[in-house]
Length: 392
Ligand SMILES: *Cc1c(COP(=O)(O)O)cnc(C)c1O
Image (cartoon, rainbow, N blue to C red; front, side, top):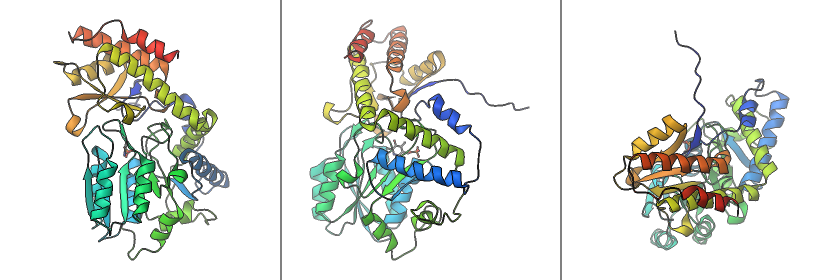
């Protein structure tokens, strides 16, 4: 007979999901009520307000899509792109490639601007693509590329797109809550994120936000949105301001309690404080890893604090290290993807995972396993280096 599932308690320091704090897990266990219950509708409004704070926007259409980050991505593209459109897609890692898939499946043309994995999106290349393609409608890029740990200059990319009369679609799945992000000030037109990265909520929801310009485009489409579930014209009747709350789909009631709790936690900490905490802990992890002799993949100025891609010591079986971390220390870190597969580890410091004790656990576990495997690393220096940085 199959019995109840009881997972091990892990420390999650990979590319997501991040550690979910007990406060959020207990919010999930609160009584399920109807999704049209006035109490629930009131909570939905609070979630919208809290998301506006997290995104730093006054956009009315700021809601969680009832599905993971990938659905938020699809929601932006399927609503804003029509067959025949031209979209500049910046690719410097895995997720830009998924944007291309979205654009092409909608019968539109993706003009690819490619940068090496581990580097930021190159503004000069985007400008050239805009000049070469004056009929471009949208510029799409990933703010925080989780596959490499590189951050791109979202503010400058949006300004450039607007100079050429384009709107922007921004992937902020890993940036939201973890590093500076200002939707209104930077002029982001459409943005999507996820709950399981720096918000430290359970996976399965995707906060999105659209400004007036984007909504105008959606309302004036020549063709119907190619997805019934993600058609914002319909979703707005459920989540929209002054909407009649017409039944569209059953919201994931308990998952939204969890999102509400995670956003209350963010508000209590303060958004700027959360950004600063991610940077502080990144610097401590970095001090420890570099003392040990590991190197960062991304140039210093483009590094994400919440996702640290580091090189693997020569001759080490990287998969074996990860499985020993999991089995012996209940600690998860991430592998490299795509062109970085087998070459790097990705150590996440996202949301609730971004804590001093996690850094010390990760460094001591890595040091113990690597030295046991005979890797050439510096012993006994990582923890003091990290501790010094933590005390600064
Ligand atoms: C995780 C991630 C996604 C996808 O989110 P899911 O919730 O896994 O669907 C998209 N873009 C980036 C940059 C991500 O890190």
